[in-house]
Length: 109
Image 1: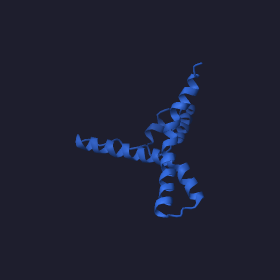
Image 2: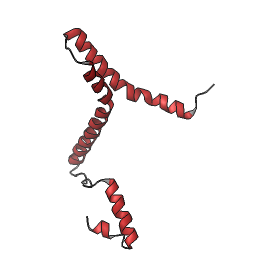
Image 3: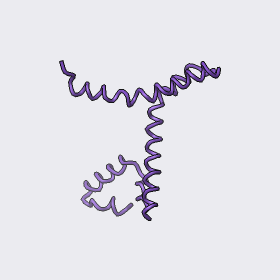
């Protein structure tokens, strides 16, 4: 009996989410057993849970840094980010379309 595509997808994603947490937990356990570092269990739990989000944010920063270096190597610069949230951009676009002047939100930036 074959697995459904959704279940196969979820099983394929498990290592992506479990490996960082397992590595953090293992390293904290080894440091406790080998070096006598006494870390409270609530700190171990928090660090284990936030391992994947921290890795995600660090990966985003690293990718931005790599892109900036590659652009600089070619004598270019990356475009600046929009300083407001995407939700505000959508709301402003909707309001400008409803008012009948769609370009007003684009020109005010």
